Length: 136
Image (cartoon, rainbow, N blue to C red; front, side, top):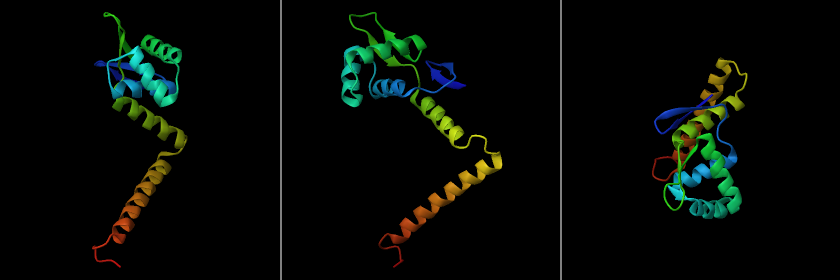
């Protein structure tokens, strides 16, 4: 279950954002609220979407509770209802679950510890090669 923070409430969603939903969220996280036209221009440049594709995604995401549509004025304004950090945490958790699916906890802990140690060794080696640190 995914718990995404939405306007101060929790949205339960079985799966994370789809790739297409992520594109829309990136657009809205970059700047919001956006008009449908602004979102269309952004997504046309960034991923090559048509106006129809963009407006369809905005409508569907509004229906799903991922995006807020304010149509009280002359134009509709769209804002994200998903907090970027919550989506990132969910995607990170999904990734870890896919990679380490069915790993016993000990093996997962060992794998993560090994990764951490390798990263630390890389940084240490890089620092040794820097001029002025006393190493040749």
